Image (cartoon, rainbow, N blue to C red; front, side):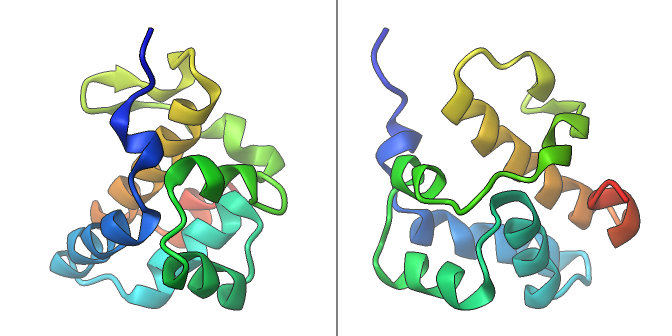
Length: 116
């Protein structure tokens, strides 16, 4: 099976879309950054560097310091697909991120989004 094209899409191209989605619902850039850093283990300066370097999604997750151990608690549908059932590990990580941004845009509290 061929790799999905999102794997080679620069994270920097999708990041503004995450921001727009959240900001349309009254959420902040800081909150988007917080959920990304929570999931990936990046610090804010490391996240900014990934964006500046135009790192693709494959490298973005491969270079992530540590995926949050609670990411397995992220469940639900994204684009009609259950994130907990996604077979490809990289696609599952991308879907986790999509789900977190969706929850942010839907007004969930940060405590619930960050599985605390």
